[in-house]
Length: 113
Image (tube, helix red, strand yellow):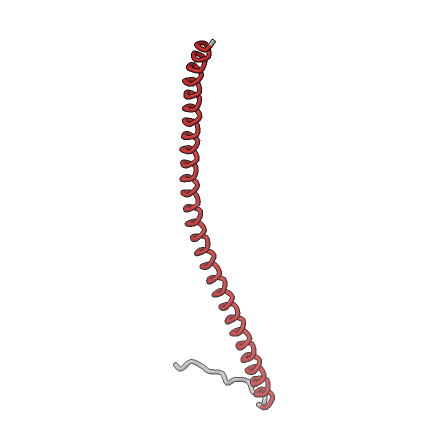
C-alpha cells in the first residue's frame, strides 16, 4: 500500500509541474500580447494627438480668416455709407446750384477749322 501511494504521488508531481508550466506559458503569452496592444495604443494615441494639433491649427487659421473677412465687410459697409453721404451732399449742392442759376443752355462748341 505504501509503495502504491508513492508511485501515485510520483506520477502526480510531474503532471502538476507540466500543468503549472503550461499555465505560466499562457500567462507569459498573454502578457506579451497585452504589452503589444499597449504599444499599439500608445502609437495610435500619439497619432491622434498630432492630428488634434493639426486640427487646432487649422481651426485657429479659419477663425483668423473669418475675423479678417468680417472686419473687411464692416470697412466696406462703412465706406459705402460714407460714399452715400457724400453723394447726398453733392446732390443737395447740385440741386441748390441749379435752382439759383438761370436756365441757360450750354453754349455749343464748334470745332475749329
